[in-house]
Length: 106
Image (tube, rainbow, N blue to C red):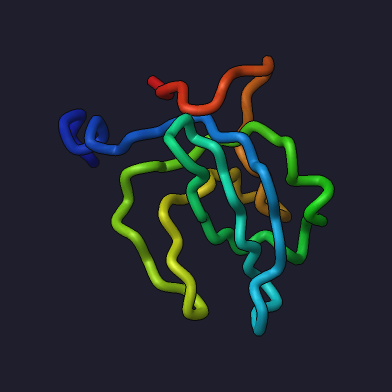
């Protein structure tokens, strides 16, 4: 069990995928540039390359854990996490209606 106070520390936001490109040397990772309502886009690495093309991802509104500590993967820094349902393939969580980037999820 996680306390409400601990859960409340996670900052979930809407984000719009601006670009997606394979990470060199990786068969799993995409480097996503995501607008989460800040001054510039946020670089997020996601292990969904086997399941989606860049064209399927660009323009999508996703849900991002925005306040995670940066993590190094394949020599690149990831500054957040794309949230996805874990089925037969990862299914990125999105919104049912168009929304602006950076909205807080409650």
